[in-house]
Amino acid sequence: MVGMASASLLPPVAIDPEGVVFDLDGTLADTEPLWAAARFEIADEVGGTMREEDFHRFYGANTAQWGAAMAEILGHPDPDEIARRTIDRLLEKFRRGVTPIPAAVAAVRRAAARGPVGVASGSPRVGIEAIPGAR
Image (cartoon, rainbow, N blue to C red; front, side, top):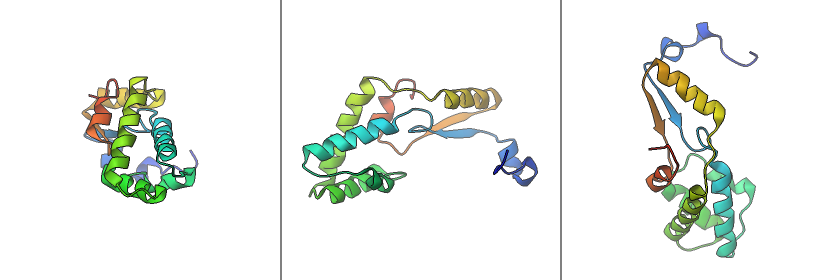
């Protein structure tokens, strides 16, 4: 494939890993639209404005980091309140259902047939535990 490194250029661990760790949000489960909806809803509720362009500040951030960034964007004085409300709203959405990403599920199954598999996430534990099959 164009743009992919040939197997000869990869270190041995990449060719034959002892285990594989998958990210949960947006990789195994299609949660990104739910996160976005929760953030937009909380922004509306506190009277702030959230733009899609603001979301780059949240990717890869932990709860304290994205809560602070979101509070700053919204002009809200309490990052902890913004984070808590966003997570509460997200949990409501998760309870209605989270869609697994089929190709990712297939990749997990292939990897698990070869060795240990783990799941990692920067999401709050309560959110991870709300996703069916994530525990």
